[in-house]
Image (cartoon, rainbow, N blue to C red; front, side, top):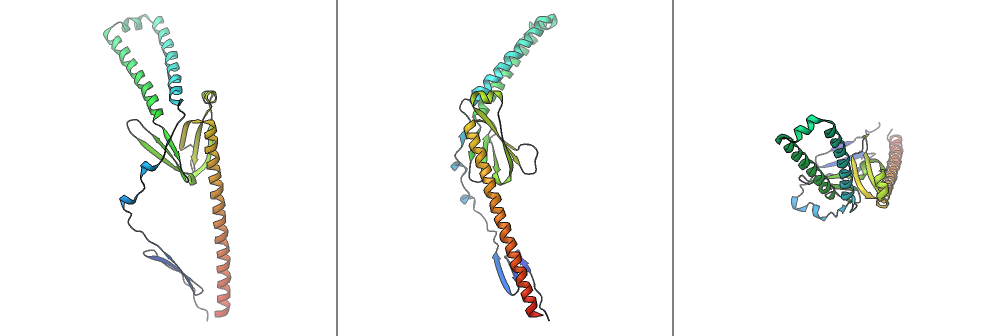
Length: 229
C-alpha cells in the first residue's frame, strides 16, 4: 500500500514542504523596522542637468515671446479699437499684468530647470524636481521595458539628448531626463541595457534551476512510489 505525499504550508511562522520523506524548512519573518534604521536620503548624490540647459530653454522662450510680440503689434496696428483700448486705464493695467505674467513664466522655467537633478544607482534612477513643491520620482530598472534617446534641432546644436524610460505595461514614457549631455545619455542607455541583459540572464538561470529541481523531485517521487507500492 502506497503512502501519501503531503505538502503543508504555514505562512504565519514558516513554510515547510514535505516530499518523499524529506523536509525543507524556509523561515519567514516580518519584523518591525525602526525608523532610525532607515537609510538617509541625504546620502544620495544627485547630478544636475547640463549647466547651460536652463539658459537654453529661457532663450527659446524669449524668442517665442519676441515672435508673439510682433504678432500682437501687427494686430494693434490693424485694429483702431484695440489701440484705443490700450490707452485706457484698463488697457494699461492689462498690459502690465500680461508683462508680469510672462516674466513670472520665464523666471519659473529657468528656476524649475535648475532644480532638476538625477541620480543613477545600481538598481534604480531617481529624478528630483520642483520649485515650490519638491518631488522625487524613483524608477526601478527592473521595471524598465525599453529606453530611448531623443534629440531635437536645439539638442543637436548644443550636444544634448533626452533620456526616456518606458515601464512594463505602459505605452507612454514614465520617466524622462531632459538636457543631458549626449555622451552621458548614451552611457545611461547602455547602463540600463546591460542591467536588463544581466537581469534576463539571472532570470533564465533561475528558471533552469527550477526546472532541474522539478525533474529531480519528479524522479524521486517515482522511485518512492515504486518502493512503497
